[in-house]
Structures are given as structure tokens and as C-alpha cells.
Image (cartoon, rainbow, N blue to C red; front, side, top):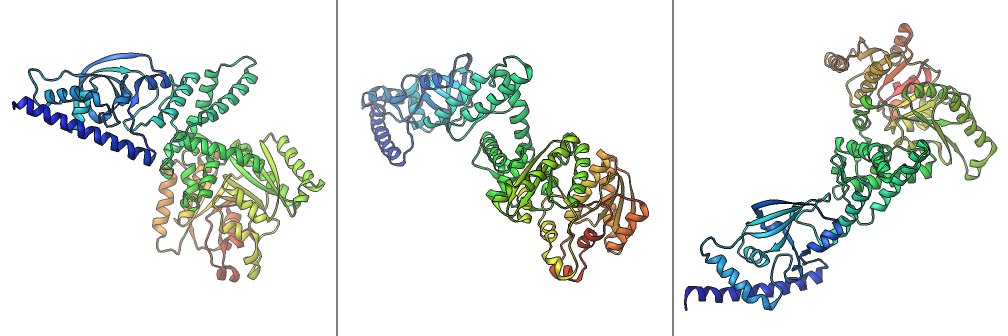
Length: 555
């Protein structure tokens, strides 16, 4: 028997083994409910609306990236194992030529390239043999097909359903032409109608504003610029996708915007997407660090330069005269920050929500905000006041509270509503005994993580509000020099001038400094005094809440 004849017989046996493996893989695929099918180029081209093409010449391509065929997808498995018995002789001849090349050997195959994958136009048997022989690359004449939908070698027939929806969405909205680095991929099919609904809302609003018909593509560009792009860019800056490893950016965007709408219906507030994301993460326990002292500061670092720091302000309301004092302070702040005020009135029972007194309180709040030309909304809820305030804190940037009932001394400090609010706060609290322009601030700084948040807010006030700063560091601390240097370096970095003084850690001294220097706001970190310290009266926050003559900003 000649060598060619011997090799040919070996090729026949290899073909039979390959067909057996193909049959076995098909059974396993049925059992595991996965696909062993090659992708059909004709089906992909129709679903992804492929058209434009360009010749890329002959080049070596990865064998593993060949995922489909043009016209012969049913003849081979996804791994290019042969299925048809009548292919035996041709397959064996190709293998014989592959092992014993004559002259220049086998010619390059011909493929269509779509994204990162390839479809065999001519040379299916050559690919089958090459994979059988463990080849990594194969020479191919490549014709590239332009697509706006990314395809990778792990794409499956089921994936094509989502890919087809994406291709249709991109083409219809015109976002395939101007995506600016966004791919809009989703993991679950049927999501693109939700994006279309959001774009339709933009189309309606734009039509009303312009007094003319607005095309879908124009509305899509507006939606991309105003809604989708800012959210995704912020998510990338904070590297939030690492907390959602099984989701795409568009998955998270849809998840958050749906939660945002649910919150707005539930709370009666307008809720920013980033606030909805924070609330969603907290509810899902995906980011335990949301409650860490630095979490709010980290989230707002970019906003201090791109926008305002306090964009949403929570204002609890009741019938005490001090409520309107606190509201006056909140309005002053909102006018400086272009912020929205969110009023919250908590009643005892569900039936009280529609009472004349509750409705009158809400109307008075809205009328006062309207007169000051400040955006606002108001919610009336039944339940425990402290719990309801805490529930909404994550959705705000600041809580403005009146000092109608400051914490008392001794055992009464433990039952004070203030103790629960302050000790569990994840956002700054502005306690207001009297309204203030907040133009001369005293910052108490000890370099603790919470004090650094107070320093962050102080630097913002100094930069944006031109608030004059006095920084008081604890003089009897062994680290006094290092603490002072840290505060000075941070403020100088932000080009904020300040006066620096040292003093003992005493509420009385803090108030003396406020009085002597004519200061009108005091910034302090939320201390962590134990219940025993609070009973003994050594909690500085409680003392200042009872005695402070100016607003107290607790971080």
C-alpha cells in the first residue's frame, strides 16, 4: 500500500471518529439544553441588517474565531465536526492534502468577517480538518462586513436574538452612527422597547418645547446626551460595574431607571438616577461601603466641579414654628445651590394623610417654595418619624432639620430622636436654630474619616460660596501638628484661604470661638460617643444641638 493510500485510509478513520464525536456532542447538547450549531451567515446577515463590505485580502485568522458558514451551517457542528456521511471522501481527500501538501499546498479559505468572528464562504472541509489537527491559525481571504453590533467568538444562536434587537434599535434610532463609545448591549432580550419608551418621552417633550414635529433620531440623540451618557459615564468614573459583574452598562441603566420610576411613584418625589442607584445598591446589599463615612464624599467628588454639591435637600415638616425657620434656611441654601427641596410630613395613621391639617401644611410648604422660586415637592407618610426620615436620607444630599426638640441631658439623651438620626446618618445634617447666610464658618477638624467629610464640605463652601473659614484643630492631641498640616494642605490644594487655631476639644470652647469671631455656621464630624458618655453629658454634638446660636452642619 502506498503512503498516499495509507494516509487516505487513516483519513477515512478520522472522519468516522469525527462524525461519531459530532453525534455524541449533539446528544450532550440536547441534554444540557445548549447549542452545538454553526451559525448561519444568511440568518445573521438578515437579523443584523448587514450590507456594506470591503476586501481585506489574504491573512492568517484564528481558527477558534470561525463560528459559522455561508450555506453549509447544517453540515458541521460548532466545532466543525462533520455531520454528513456523504462528505467522507471529500473530507478524507482534504485531510490527505493537508498532511501531504503538494506544491503550494491547500489554497486559502474564503470568509466573511463580522465583528470579531468569521463565516466560511468556501473551505468548510479545510476548516474542519484544520481544527481536527489542532491548528491555531489558517490562511483566509477575508471580506469584512460592516456592522454596528459587536460579535465575539462566544456568540450563540440565542445571543443572535438580542443582537438582532440591538441592530434594529441602533438603525431605527440612528445611534449606530453616533454612539460615542456606548455599545447598548443587554444580557436579556426584550429590553430595547424600554429604551424606545424613554426616547419616545423625549420626543414628546421636545415636540412640545419646539412647537414642531421632532424625528425619532433627533429625540434619540437628545436622550443619549441628557440621560444615558451622563449616567453611564458617572458609573464608569466610579467603577460601579464591578458591583454588578453579570450585567452590562445598559442592564444597570435600565435596572436603575426602573427603580427610579418606582421610587418616584412610591415617594412622590423626583429622584435622580444616581440617588436611585445608591438606594438600589443599599437595598440589594451590593455595596456595604455605602454606609462608610467616605461614601457620600466619593460619590460627590466630581459633582463639586461639574454641578452643585447639594442638589436634593430633605426637609422634614411638622406644625412647630421651628419648621418654618428650618425651611427658611433650606430655601437660602437651595437658591445658592439651585437645589430641589423635598418636604416630608409624617403623620401617625394612614387616615391622617388626607386630613385638613396635613394638606394645609403641605400647601404652605409648596407656597413658600414657589414664592422663593425654588423647585420642590412634598410627601405625606404615616409611621414613625425617625424611620421615615432615615428611609429617605439616601435619596438626598443633605437633611435640614429644625431644633424644636434638641436632645436633653442624662438618660433622656438616649431616647432622643436626634440620637438615632445623627448616629445613623449617611448624609450631612444641617440643624437650624436660626437662619444664616453661612458666610463665616468654623470647621472642627481632627483628621478622622468623618472629619475629612466635613473638611470636604468646608472646602466646597470656601470655593463655591466664598465662605470665610476658620479651622479649629484639637490642641491637646499628640497628632495636632499632623492634623493641622493635613487641613492646611487640603484647603491650599483647593485654593481656599483659612484661619487656623488650636483649642481643647470642648463644646464650650467651640461656642466661644463662634461668638468671639462672629461666625454663622459650625461644621463638625458626627462623633461616636457611647451611650454612657451621652448619659454623662460628654457628647459634644448633643451639647451643640442644645446651645448652638447658628446652624450646625453635622457630617
